[in-house]
Length: 179
Image (cartoon, rainbow, N blue to C red; front, side, top):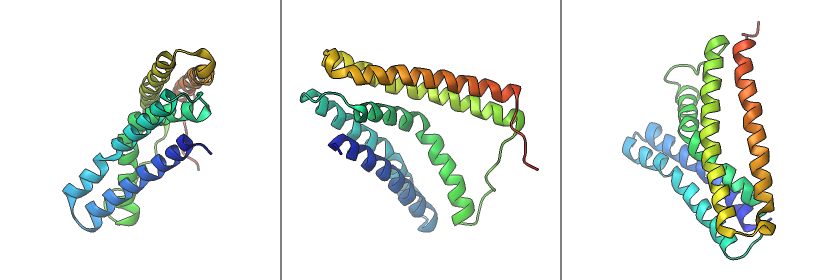
């Protein structure tokens, strides 16, 4: 496995470790400011991955699937990071600390609106990740070394379109409560 692949794994683990440490510090030890600082450090992980990926390609590596995944990871992490932390925060408070409201299950029009908002976050992730991919392609300026990145752009564009169709379908065929 390449260094960048390990960096992606380490980034994901680091993201969740910082979140867990932030919640434990905030709720168990009642150190709210330190907990907030730990949660605020999550974007630093993205920055480290961004630098590592760029340096690897700058030094002459041919882009692989791992470099494409790194771009997607960065885009998704930035676009969904805050909502993932909020999602985890609600569940940590309810299931671990036994306080706060029970996590909401969404159905019908409420679910459709929420999913469509999530699709908007997907668009934001796409803009960031695709921007990073385009930047790498432009920066390297050698199509034989960036062919994989171009393929990732095509596939992600298709996935974004399918996700839009799913978002729209939720308004037509709303999610129903299981009986």
